[in-house]
Image 1 (cartoon, rainbow, N blue to C red):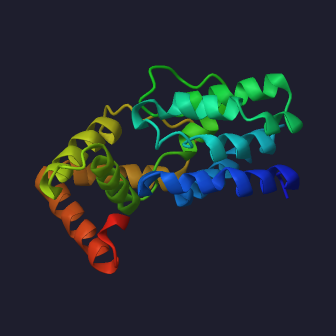
Image 2 (image 1 turned 30 degrees about the vertical axis):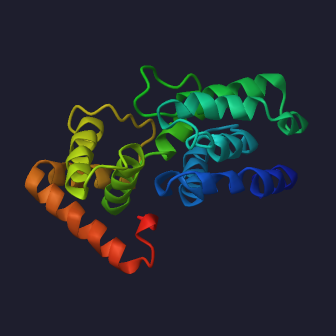
Length: 217
């Protein structure tokens, strides 16, 4: 096991449950996805501290339900105020963890300040078109609950074009074939707005029909 068992047990029992407060795009499934992806990139870095990698990924969206637009700052603050983490990390390590959480957001105006920030920032990106279609819709629904589906599809298209288009702001700090294939497929879809909206509508309607409660989408 790469991660200290006591640290892992503490986070699973005390941090993971908080993610039930987040909307579906930033729930515990997303956190586990980011943890697994973070380990993949960490494996390429010599002398990496896996306890730090795990902790950064585990806390990076914990404040999302409080304020999505400032969640990276809030999440870093929540982590830094968790006295239990002092049992596992030095003050310098905790500083790096906090900075990495603060730096993970793709729309940040600066690159992550450490390799740890670059790991979680990269791991936080979608790597399938289906996940991207779902997350952009559910996140838009969280921010604009009174919008119609058509308005949310329009919002998703504009957001994803800005983020993942040819000159998009999303940055990637590790070479990853899965992500490169995803980016190619998504950009092809974004090249045709009508096709994108039709594809997202069909996918979201399929998800709604498969859920007993449409709130899950």
